[in-house]
Length: 475
Image (tube, rainbow, N blue to C red; front, side, top):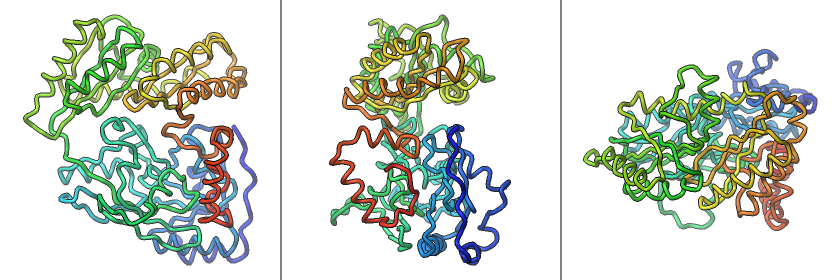
């Protein structure tokens, strides 16, 4: 674990000023109460802060930011604190938590939009959309605790990107408090607005380094009425792309999920998570979880899935398959997929990579990365899974059985360096959906071109000349 720098001392009078702005209910100073805000999810970092400020409105956020700017005190914006790269870890700065800003401001079913506070929990947005016969499709493992402001600040992806896109594609407008305290009201629900720079894109994926997202207008979609979900065994890793292409065609391009799963992930999920079991007879090297969905009730997606599987089985691309016969069985398929992440921890130390490559290069990437890792540290167990439909591979590595955890982790830089180099050689990315945060700052500096870095620094300087907004993250 990396120890973050010591906590700063607040200038005289600032704590009282913050208390006057947010009230006693909005200021946390007790060390025990601040623990959940300074503990990073993966245990890679541990932060420190003099206080956690919890504004309840956008004007309060503005006043807090102005107070901190006047005092020369840096701020770390924080949503649900579920990030995986340390982007919400404080190094002595004031933590500004959006937890109290959890209002649904407006639902416009006719415009297929919802306007929300940044502190709304993602699962709540999904529920509200469903109550209005609509779908908000962003879905990820932490949806029960992550907040939409954090999702947008990291441009979160999730399992439905193949059909609906990343958070960026799901956002029409933003409300942002700038580093000087000004409030930008960009809460538009327009699909077309060709009036100069589209400013919202500066803040989506910026991880709070250019301002604090306090509200958003997000897209809604027709609520799915029919679904068909299948768990299949593939003949070979190289067949996954052909199977994906055929699934899109056979379903009328209604594929909303396509997850690649190696055998080892099934083994550890069954071994360490109660309620998981084998869905197919026999053991196979590669599997996929496929889901079709549509809002058109008359579409027979079950028949479409059956026909698709029959044709791919006849040609030997799919060697076994089962289709969910109920919602509960569908949920069981997805439960196994989500359990793969937590089930890795009992297997010992792990080195995790969140990379992306063009979809057509996914099998090649996995094979080349596996070979490179085996050369560096023989016996390492690759868990290469993820959203093949958008090219995102979660390339996680578990230590060899019986190995010394720290000895394995000592090879983190060498292994990650090779894995990233392979992804970049295919015009890929070293961070597909988890962002940069604190963990990957040096990777960004090493792999972005001088021109790109210069442009990014110019934007940062223009918005945050004092460098007080989430310092040490991204750049």
